[in-house]
Image 1: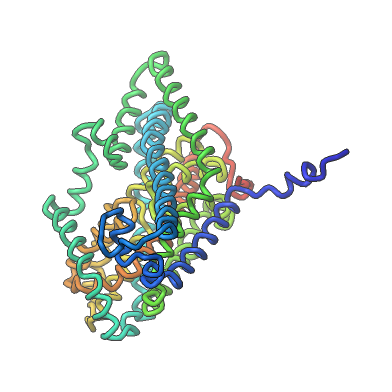
Image 2: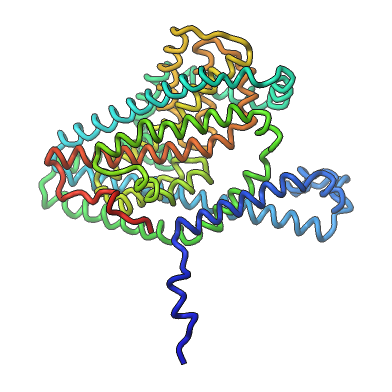
Length: 477
């Protein structure tokens, strides 16, 4: 007898992007439902009158009546957080050694330090140009829509009062950064590791990139018989971590579900509604960036944006869930290499550098947010002030860490550069986590676009080893 289930099993198998997307949607649905229906009264019905203490497993007399059902609810919260955090740790565990060994092998394979300088100059120039264009798009859009004039003074004051503590914490962090020197000099100095093992232990991606570039460049100076075994070792280790990424992608849907439940459950839908025009302006600006900047760049590289988006979907969904381009980096590199057909050498260099300095989505968001806050306080920014915003936002976006909310810390410096009240930062903090998810998707997509463009430039100049496998012919997993 023929097993019918075996016959139809392959057809019913869902691809990795589809399963991750289902995890995202399910997590959003469950999280929003919890946000709407679960309240302090729900905890009180379970015998918990101090939910924060109960979830922290701190003894509190107010929770003396908590029973088995309350314990089950706490266990569900803890299991959700544990699954999400373990997945994020696994991604970060892979990111540093993957960047280190792939870059060493890629740079050593160049065989000529001058080629490294050419690729580096092209990559940095491309990222700076796209960052400036993103800021310009954001400034034009926010000046046309003027979302700050659509928020009432009462709503502004309520949000500002509720987030005073968060603003003070961000200001303290920004002050500590400012004390280290001017932004551009601080960024350049911080890129040079004083202790390579400390950089690896802290996961300082910029320092790891610099260290890998120096080691790879040093290998190019050795004879082939001396550098060959080391390059082969780096490539083998890199393949090991690539296999680990493939394994992680199978559990990604569950982890993404847990991440989205945690985010959506803490999302205040009332706040999002109050700042709806601001949120729509940011998201609209990100879409414009895709269409106006990325689409022409990809077209000039001989591909099309839709194919890039489809090929990058696993990385984009993870970026949306984690709000961290650094944590998503291993998956970003895998998608660029396998789905977009970019060479290992270009992928490792451009994506690693992009996760550190290419923050187009963050730059656009900061430009819109700065003018939005100025509008909240009825400040009319002059052309000179807005040009200052372009310069300050470019530097802050390049120096922003690729972690959740990392751009907010350096954003304080942007506001101070043109005298915008820092109190307004509390208003956008109310929806920052939501918008962080969208802009991280753009940051990751920008890294992929950069890799495709640099790959085309290298191949058209006769510097690549093979013909390109363009995104127009690729298929996502």
